[in-house]
Length: 355
Image (tube, rainbow, N blue to C red; front, side, top):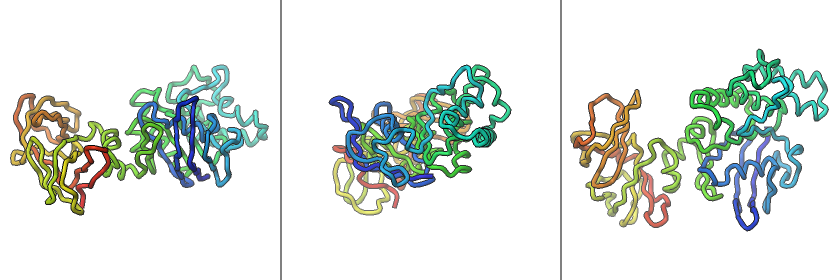
């Protein structure tokens, strides 16, 4: 396994600057996920590491060596694309071994690697089949296996599960996590799916507009988002935002009422946006805030309850089976030690509510 270090990386296309002065270090054995909306530059960044896109400035180091302008074949990487890109006339075994055979790897070594990888990916019984005889999940496992047989220092995944249905995505997500635990290899994974990022990553890099917005563990990014964009991008339903003001005593006030926050340190009084996850809104008949129910979404083991609070749409997750209906008036509370505050002008984090 190898580390990857990006130093002041710049990528331009024509007059468009896609990535600018980006610094990022990926440790050996890490599972790093690049997360962000379409067009944020995450796939471009991944392709530049693979050598498929030329960089305009800066450096890409893999395993301590400058690979900024090296050919893809020299970088010691294995890559899995969104498309399976399997050869339809070749068997699973031939698809997995193709790159090794072209590189002149000895036949016995090719057989060893293919058999070993096939067993890891539960493809041992399918080696003689052709892609048309496989399910979507099996085809994607073959594509992953084709990368793994290289025994590379770094593996790159470009949204490999996006073409699968929800059930297959969940199954392969679990298999990828177990695969990383077994191999301990360095893996860099691109996705716009927050569930994939949260479940797979050692660390998450949240991107927007070619810039890194935040780097941290899944728990850090979820619990203490660096700005309003990160806060709103992660979570389903997404974070609730309430514009209001805070005084020197930590009392937040908005049109719906007020709540005293548990702040770790004093903050300057003024206009702020309070953000709270749906699971941190608690419907409680003794709660200080009042709202009316606009929609109830039963989710099996919980309900998502949408509220109208003085014209502000909020969502709350309710884990019991209490009967709630549209139009019903309810009172609720916000867990004051689990909120975030953001500057209204910049969207940057002011203060976590957690002490």
